[in-house]
Length: 145
Image (tube, rainbow, N blue to C red; front, side, top):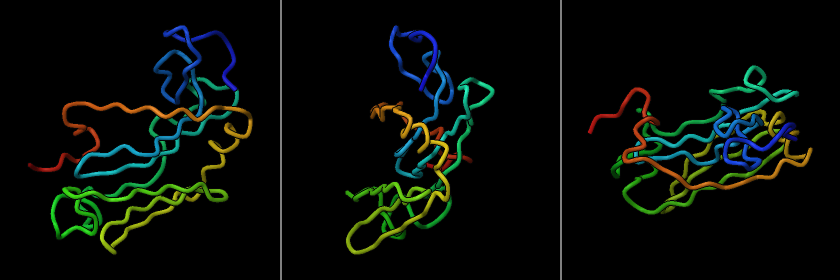
């Protein structure tokens, strides 16, 4: 679905922020640190470009001052211990949940149709694993130590 030439890496990588030089819808399934978890859809309308893509995206956030996700036993999901994350594409949204020791928390992204349309058009879902020293940019406002 991405027209034009290969991007800066001489490949066809694309996202909603044009990181590699090409634009397309983006799905951030799991952006996480111990204080916050985001699942974000970044839709684009055709033709894909900086002006047609949702740079900030829309989705769900766990943690960030809520008691559903964080460090310690007072949270529904204690991020100091293993937990199971689940994401399911529903019609037309995405169900996002975390489970740990009989406790769970769940949210739903109501409409992912803009991203689903790109997948139906042949966009390939690519998984990438990356990080930074703190992933603190997820905490808005920043969580205290």
